[in-house]
Figure 1 (spheres, rainbow, N blue to C red):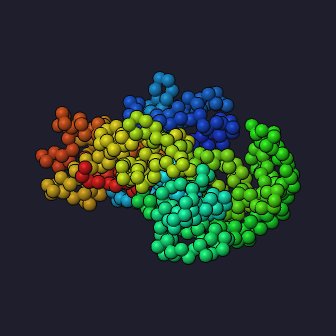
Figure 2: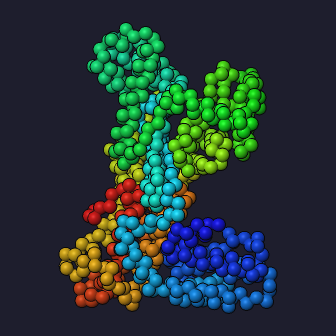
Figure 3: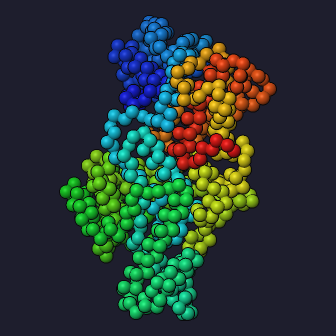
Amino acid sequence: MLLNFINQYMNDYISTFYNDIYHIIDNLIKDNIIPKDFNIKKINVDFSSKSKRGDISTNLYIILNKSLIKKDFELKNYILFEFNKLSYLNKITFSNNGFINLILNDDYIFSKLIEVIKKNHEYGKIILKNKDKNINIEYVSANPTGPVHVAHMRGAVLGDVLSNILSFVGYNVTREYYVNDTGTQINILGKSLYKRYLQLLGEQIEIEKDEYPGDYLIKIAKNILDNHKNEIIKKNIKDKDIFFKNYAVKEIIKTIKIDLKNLGILFDTYTHESSIIDNNSNINEVFKILKEKELLYEGFLNKPKGEDIKNWKPRKQLLFKSSYYGDDSDRPLKKENGEWTYFANDSAYHYNKINRNYNLLINVWGADHIGYVKRMKSIVDAISNSKVSLNIIVCQIVKLIKNNQSLKMSKREGNYILIKDLLKDVGKDPLRYYMISTKNETPIDFNIDEVIKQNKDNPVFYCQYAYARSSSVINKFKNDNILNSENLINKKIDFKFISKYEREIILQIIAWPYIIFQSSTLCQPHRITNYIENLSTIFHSFWNKGKDHSEYRLIDNSNINKTISKIIWIDSMRIVFRNAFKLIGIEANEKM
């Protein structure tokens, strides 16, 4: 049950309330007041700070009343009795339609604001019961056949921000890049580089259609020529192939590292596919485990859907019983010629990660890999004896728009938008923010012209501006020597100076730990951007009210108690913004 997890780790008002209503439900089930199969998912709780009904509203009474086994049970009185025990609640009312509306205790709210200031950059961290959980997050893993471009950008940022979030809540996180440095495309890359090298030596040779035409290979070829002159030609064919493949991969990975670093992304480890394949122990162990579990057999796969019969014939292959674990069909591990399949190599790689003592594996993939999700989950389940979980996050495409037109790309044809070029045009902060601002299953339309505008329609600017505005207030307090924010924990809010609009902001501030809980447990960084956008909107709205109404102004030199009451929540809000920005990987600018 989700609530049991929340109860162990959380200390914010949202999870606290969830925990309390679930205890009420558990007690009613134990006393045979409601059935054991009561559907708890029907209980809705609204924590909307804009609600006119109260700070919290729930349909708890309505749903429980419909499920009563003992029809004469005085449910309303029971709920009132239980809720009155909760010290953080100040007022409990029932509306005519049966909804329960609750107001939080002012002292409770104040204690949570002081908690923000006390914990500062630690605010929002979850107290983990299992602190030793090791998580491996593999992301980007772009084939080293060219520079990283826009197709890699979303997964790169999502993987990095998710790593930040999971590290923040206390997990041991390894950020990993898997270098696919073997296979047909790498052979073609080496051949393409060799041709560029020969061109520099004066040979009239063309880059063929299936080869890589990018100018980046000319630069690498010049590097080879400067360091090795024409000596490479003297090597035998096999040595030349190996040299150009390895040289291309090495130089392209260098470029990829630089571009990703400029996007704010660093990895803990780079694992090369060649090291997994060359070390036969990985694939041999996978084979051994599957054989012992009787999950392998020689057989034939059904004809793939939509494939021309003339181009397909049944072939006997070594198959893994992937369908046993919920996959759509069984999967081949060996080709007809005896070579291991790509899936087999990937299985060996995941076995390698399992052997490195990770409890949870997270892969961030592009939408073009969605067909591999079930088979990879199946193989990890099989070879780990269901002890290691694999979570695969699939990112939908990013469509670039400029001058109201969609920009088309093709890596093979050499016309693609590089991340380094986007960084020059747009900057790091907008790129990082927008790449996680939408749920990963939803495609993104990234309008280059819009994201550089400095107005309220640009969410990254709007959020950073909210932080800058609140910082200007804090700095004015310090300059006027009215109050030093470090001493705020010794002060107290007088709620008679807090308007309903400020209360709305405060409830958002103290909901931050729950946002962290959701983002980390659901692996959904977009919940953080949604949260700070909402917080920014209600803060800017309140700020604008102060232009016309003096009672909403944040600084009142004639009333120190009023001033202190406001500076406490402003400083708390700044802390939450700063913590959110750090997780996202964007700047917290005090002036804009």
